Image (cartoon, rainbow, N blue to C red; front, side, top):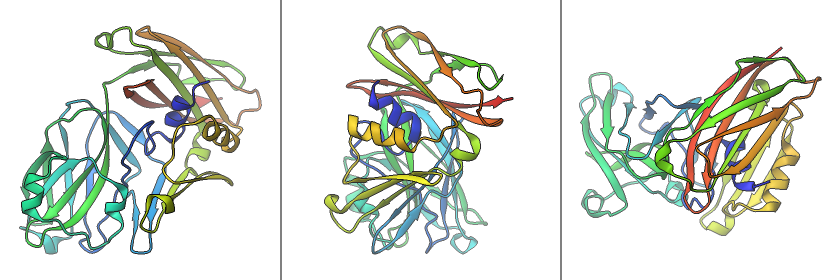
Amino acid sequence: MRSQITLISLLCICFMAQAQEYALGSLGEKADCGIALEGNNIIKMPKASFSSADATWTYPFPLFPIYSENQSISGNILCHDRLAGSEARVSISGFDIFDLLSDNLTMDNQNMDNLTVVKSSSQIRLNSTGDGRFALEGVPSGLYTIKAVDDLNSTVIATTPALIAKGEIAMDFPSRIKAGDILQLDIETPSAWGNVSKIFGAIMVYGQDYETAKINLTANDTVDSLQTTIAIGDKSMQVNGMPRVSTELLMNLLTILPQNSAIAMQESTSEKVELYLFTDPALSKGEYVLTCAVYAPGSGLMGLRQGTVEVE
């Protein structure tokens, strides 16, 4: 087993192998703002939050779009109408989680102009209801933060994570199976990826169990103080510091997986593989969330996609 793909499949987002930055979305409590991203490759977001002595940040939307490398990123800034007519700058950049420690974060516009980590930005004006649409140029694969800054007082009014995969993957599977059946999942990757060694993985989790998944990060002011709690149902595990892919982490994750789950993985240089998820005859009936990910050692997340399966 390879722990990298199990970690990606289980959490869907938030912790990518070798990722150095983590960010969570915010409704921007003081400005009543949020960022709603648009996209066709949508995954269901586990409940995620970050808390410190100064602030609590939560991801405000149940669905999360996954973008491909260099794909244009678009969405809407949703604010209170008291900000109608305001000018705002939306930018995307790599982000350290400890920049979110303050709920009164301000940015120096001059410094932002010279900040090399800003990959793309867009100037917008909020309409009469306090909303505004933005579009950002695509960026290389990785984990980023999109934030909106009010030009009037250089205050960050909203922020949200953005996960950029290398490209899109396709998956084919039956929409319905009977408990005890073997689910065959075909995963296909772009031919442009070549014959690089890739780890294909999938996890199927009962929908009601998936709804209970939570990820909470707490910290004071140092990396050493960071603690991550991952919970599914009544089971949970904790990790001190920045989570790092390891056999120990994999074993701990497996201990909190619900019984109504199935996992499969395979390493291959092929463009297309077949995975087989074995189910138990006692599997609960209902809808299951099927998450598929492709990971390449040294390159990170190649693709991520999600679907649903009805178990009869």
